[in-house]
Length: 263
Image 1 (cartoon, rainbow, N blue to C red):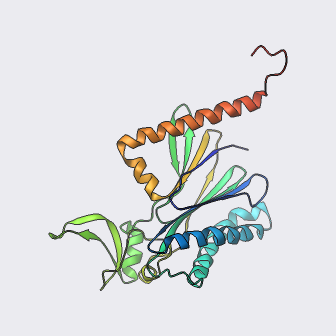
Image 2: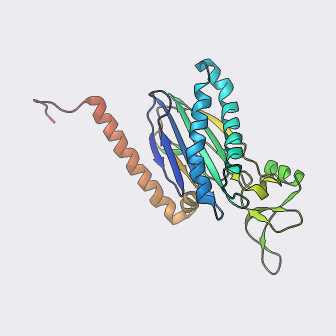
Image 3: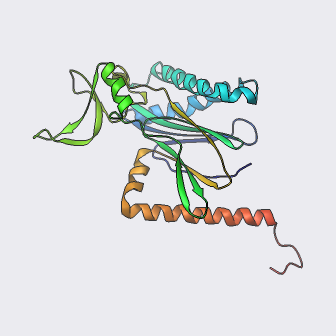
């Protein structure tokens, strides 16, 4: 089994649990937004993992897993959103992005809605990044097409001269609400009326021995990373973690020096 270092950088809620077999893991980061976003994120961390765990355990064989896992994840996201809307939490203008990673031995599946993100750090003589998810922004072609078809509009804030300010946002056609800066999320009832959905995009990745760590984080961490000065500091921290893990792994493989050792 390929071993990876988990580096879970979060802004709101993290769930890391071992709910399947010995080598199976579930990791989830949910980032709330809006007045009740923290309640939405907390709800997701309590409900979504159990829903997915039940769905996975209902798959009868490993051969069926690849065929069914996408449907299981999709249905669990949709069902959890329905339960959220019935939970009593006011999600009219509140919601949460979520990225989930499921590990099955050397294969992982990433399910994502919104702009939280997961990456794999690959170290093969040099450090490179494998993206496990992509941001769901309103001005992405397919996302925007769905929003327009649902009766919404996509537009950034504008200054007094009409110049765009900041990211593209989702609005009702005839009202300046909700102004959501993502095209997929849990909750966000008003935005869901104009094309914002909670259906996850799912990516499968087969781990290689050179895949050394995985990072799950909300958009705030990635914005920090994009800043050129901070990027070098961030990568230096990651490199130190990789070196520490590689040294530890090598030490464990060789075994602790016993009596009579020349070390």
